[in-house]
Every structure is written in structure tokens, then in C-alpha cells.
Length: 266
Figure 1: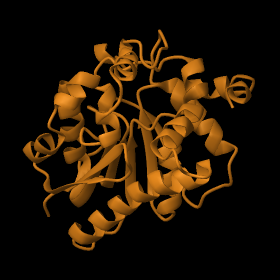
Figure 2 (figure 1 turned 135 degrees about the vertical axis):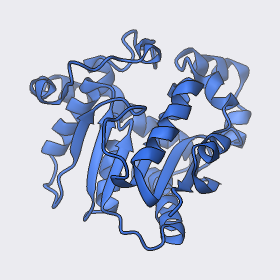
Figure 3 (figure 1 turned 60 degrees about the vertical axis):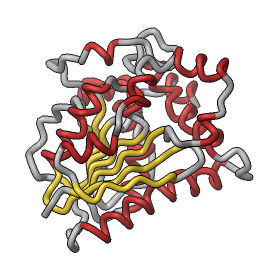
Figure 4 (figure 1 turned 120 degrees about the vertical axis):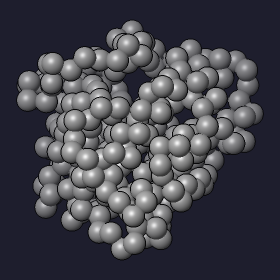
């Protein structure tokens, strides 16, 4: 999969996607996932989807196939979003969805498949990841509503206030210091419409599997995730409530991950 991306014309898409005036936050310039350049490299972008597949397989080790594992991990996540929005939005239609920290667009495409009538935008700080996301989407079946890709900071999107019905942040928070987590949540509150739904999916501190990781494995994991300790010490639910959200709910959507959903008051 990596070779297919690196041998393609994906590089030509960078100029159309990259915001050259963007100033990267200091935390984002750290090495991540054993890449010295973090998320700002073609190799990291080319390997991202394969790494995501591996994460899904690890989450559901007894699954008979990757498809079955995805049905559980992605299916439960989408169901949590849908159920929350149905219960608390007051009948608000889902017309606009923002996927913050979309990487190479895996979660973005799942959201677009789930809500085909919605306008879906994938936002990320890495123009390399976004170029791969756009490349993959260009080589897939056309959609009624094509996905938009935006190179921007999740903490300061420059998007209009009250312009989205769902803001999804998947597997992003564990890569952020506490200050960035707080600002991501505040920005989500600003850009969501009244009745809109926030959905955060990430490692669960209450996961028995993660709690029982051997010290060696946990230390190895932390070595590629510089802000993992800050993530586990941050009370996500309290942070969401402090930003003004209501109906904050947390469920374990697979053995490793939780999905936290919340509503902007109507």
C-alpha cells in the first residue's frame, strides 16, 4: 500500500491543498509514531492507512477478517454518533460534517458513506496526509457530494461559527497536549450549530486491555506518542462540559476505544 502511494502522482496535489501561510503549533513539530518529521512527511502519509488497519485488527484480535474488525470498530463508532444525534439534536438534519484531524481520510470516508446526503469536510494539519486523502478519494467511486479537504488547525479552523451539525475527532486527542485538547473542544463548540453533536473517539483509560499492557509495551507505545501521559491525565468529559456542551455520554465502542458524544444546547 505504501509503495502504491509513493509511486503515484500524489505529490502533484500538494499545491492545491497546502496553506503555505499556516504556522504549525510547536507540539505538532515533535516526532510522532517513530517518524522524525512527525506527520509532515510523505512516508508517514503513505503508511497511515496500513497503520490504521493494524490498529483496527489489534482492537478486535478475534475478528476473522479486517472487514469484520472494521464493522465492529467503525460500525459501533458511527452508531454512537447516530444514536446521540437522534436522541438530543431536536430533529436537526445532518447537512454538514467536519472530521477534525482526518489524516488520510479513512474516518472521513466512513462518515461520508454513512451520511451520503451531507456535505463532509476533512480537516488536518498535514498537507501530506490531505494529499493522500484526496488522491484516494479521486480514485474511488464518485459521490453525490464530494468530500472537501481543508489544511488548517483544529484549534483554529477559520470556519464560520455554527456551520456544522457533527464534528468528529477520531484518534487525535492522544496526540495532543492538554492545552490543545481544550482548544479543540472549544473550537468544536464554536462551529457546531445548536443541537449539533460532538463525537470524540480515542483510547479509553478504562480499557482493561490497555490497563493490562506490560510495562515494556506501554513504554514502547509512549516512546512514539509524546503526549500520551497528558491525554490520560486529562478529564475529557469535564473539558467538554466546561466548553458548554450538554448531554455528555461515554461508551466503550470496542475493547480499546471509547466514544464520547455531546450536544450544543439548543
